[in-house]
Amino acid sequence: MDALDKVRRMEAKILAEGSPEVLKGIRYIWLKNPWNLSHRQKVRLRDLLKVNLKIVKAYLLTKLFRKL
Image 1: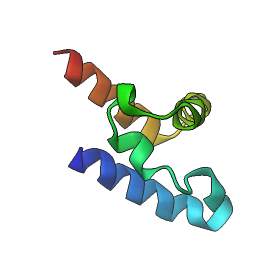
Image 2: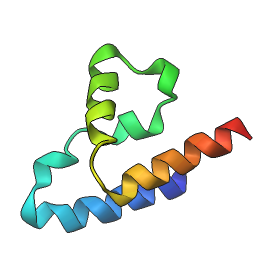
Image 3: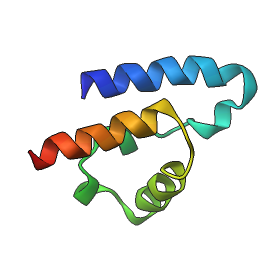
Image 4: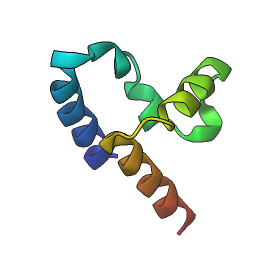
């Protein structure tokens, strides 16, 4: 989870110049367990997973590690 948060911070700095609203207010969406997300957070996560960002790749890796 710490690595995921570091990736999110790094990407937020990069996107802050061009489109900061993409990652605004989503910290807890990445850090919460998927089954604990509210409906609104699930919708936002689904939309974010369609975007090609490093944080998305890192999030998908954490899901794979949970299955192990």
